[in-house]
Amino acid sequence: MSRGHQQERDAPWAHGWRSSDTFIISTMSLALFTDELLFAFMLPLLPTVLEQRIGLDPSLTQRYTSIFLTEGAIVSVVASPFIGSIADAVSSKKTLLLTVLILALISLACLSLTTHLIWLFVGRFFQCIVSQALWIVGMATMAENLGSEHMAKIAGLSSILTAAGTTAGPLLSGLLFGAGGYWCAWAGAGAFLLVDIIMRLLMLEKPVKSSGVQDGEREPLVKNNQPGANGEQPDHPPCVEVRGWRFHVCLFQDARFSAGIYCSFAYALLIGCLESTMAVHVRSAFGWSAVQVGLLLGLIQGPGILLAAPVGWMKDRVGSRIPTTVGFLMSVPFIVLLGAPGDDRFSFAAEARGKTIFVGCMAAIGCLLCLLNGIGSIEATETIDELEAREPGKFGSNGGYSRALALTSMTWMAGLMCGPLLAGFVMETFGYFELQCCLGVVSFTAGLVALLFLNSRRSHAVKQQQDE
Image (cartoon, rainbow, N blue to C red; front, side, top):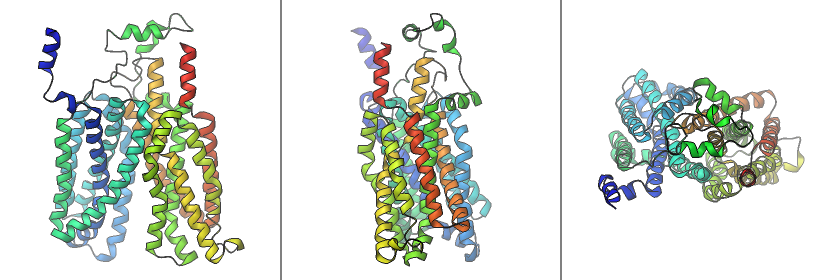
């Protein structure tokens, strides 16, 4: 009794709600939302910064806007593995997250105060690193505190927050700029960061699950569960920690992880191609304006926002194999058919019927693609769990969630970058229909990879029962 009272006395103030799942989810959700909001917040203000504060000719605004956005994608791809390694090397994610938020304030100040072009790109550089760090560490923190068995729901929540932040960022920026001017807009962004910092200071992390290295009491229990086939395994392999490039080799040797990475890349490639070519195609084929393009983009993004929660719940129950396979394979006919309207070779898709076909295919693709949400993150965290269960301590005392999630983030950004490049090359060389045929092949191969190499949660349960 006295020991229990002593523990209660030593516990931090309000330990119960500060370390609760609800508060951890709320804190990380605000972090992810703020990350996306700040990443898109700059777009409406960019012409003002370039033309009025830096003094560039208005004819150069579009060029430097494109460079500004491209810099963000490149920095995100290159920085991801380094951020993941640092995050797994640090035992306290809370300290790392606070450091990242302070860097976010510095990058925000750099972007808002700049009067020289070089400082604009320096600020963007640090903003991109901070953005990647917030996503990787935020997702890893939720996976560590809630368990990877909830990763599909976490990924669904992340999709909703990403879409909400991306939408709210330019909207809030424009409203604040119109209401109070330039500095009022930046003050709104700073307020989000300050609230985020306060919640991060209040949040208490749960103890990280033991990996078999530093927990003397649990280590023998973990080892006793291991020796099934070879009798001498418990004493030697489990404590060899995998670091550096060997960590990445180890993960990619796992067929499930490699399949998840490929599916994530294919998903991002599809999104990048569809969104980068839609405006030009519908303008030339149907004479549609930006209003119709915005509605079509809503057909792609909207179902993912609405269905993210139920899809995440379903994946946590049945695994990602079946939903991912269905999402990719059933998208193929709609993706190919999307290229027929506006093409003179297909008389059945002419005039008004072609517009109906195009809109219908886009809606169907949007609904099916929502089945792919979080595919890379889910497979990454569950692969780490499986490898750790077989060899405790393989990825160090802090685990390998952050490094694995960094790989999925890098793959996703690479897919979004490659999509417009592929689309531009194929459309200029061949045409829109041929591009959709290429995307159909990509979707079909990704579906086969998912069917052959991803595992269902049900099959894992059967294996565990057989092992026991």
